[in-house]
Length: 482
Image 1 (cartoon, rainbow, N blue to C red):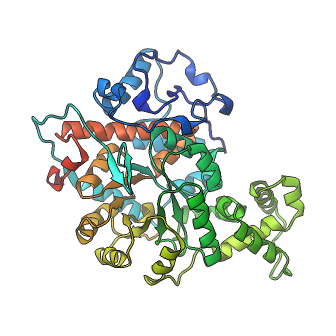
Image 2 (image 1 turned 30 degrees about the vertical axis):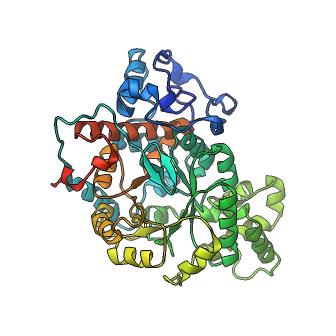
Image 3 (image 1 turned 90 degrees about the horizontal axis):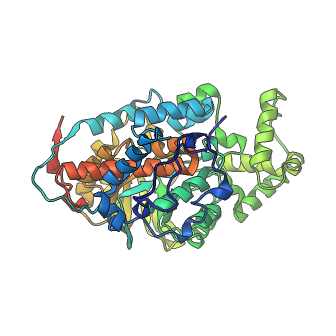
């Protein structure tokens, strides 16, 4: 798999709000100049101030949208085009060219016939934006408050697992990009890098932790303690993945990254999990032995390579294989009920959000259980084929919640206009997934930054062109049925 990380146009070393408008465009041929980690201007984002649309540079440009347009058009004078396409269809096509077949299947694929992914798109397309005129939008405020922190925009990076399939720096690259842009990053349980590495890359920038509730309660408690120690500010509990959905693309390739030791770094870096894996490694082997084939040998090397420690030592040790087997055994549980949330609450001081809600009654149950927020999501269509489009579920859940806790939206967001629609229908903020993953594939951390900048720019321009000066102006009357 080839995943280039050399950006075509070097990004500023600070968030866009601090971009020097006098900076000249990148010189011709910049696309051929590699960026090495030691030269990465984002390597210490902890010293960056958060992105802020009150910054004079943003104000001088006329907002995030015009700032981003100015950067792109100025570079265009020198013949330099964006490394990361600004529209999702071309972004996905370009990423497909650089990703391996298994990597692309994992990221792009959805459940079954993928009709739920299509439903997500249709739900967004059923709402047309109705611009309003002659309203003062000369100063626009995209900021939102979530759990005591004021954010410069209503965007969050959704948790995505196994990012090592997409780029060698995986979650750490995304963490650096999110920190540089002031966007919260929801760290995945199925990350390819431990949460502590991501936290170190983010400084004091906002981050949350997403939990798949394991069969091992001791492991869950350990994850939560580590998340708090790593500076995570909220806990997102994914409810819709008690088992993996029927993902035809992965099945047809016989590809489950976790069985290769990929996407389990949170586990292999955890003391509780390491003890469980060591106990398993010490037990007598049962069951049929795997056939020795070239593919099996490659899997063995993958498991040894991804497990902590020297690869040669891992090849001789039973621990890496035991870690994979232990993970597959305890990944998730199917016996959870609403009553279990009280036990989770006792394990953490973090605000708890439930991700995966699609029914208003479940939102009411969540409120009764005392959660601090909900995320309307169908996992990007990856779990249940033939399910409701996520945006179709949003208004009913917003009504059921009645403003008592934040309602966030996830699934199907491809551009700034999609973000606008979700906010207009009552979402407090919006999670973005596949777009930033494709940006990562094309240009590493710089690619993720460009995706964030493009989404924020399009949202800002859409607000300006519809007469909205702040997120409070985004209301359902700005949408009409298709």
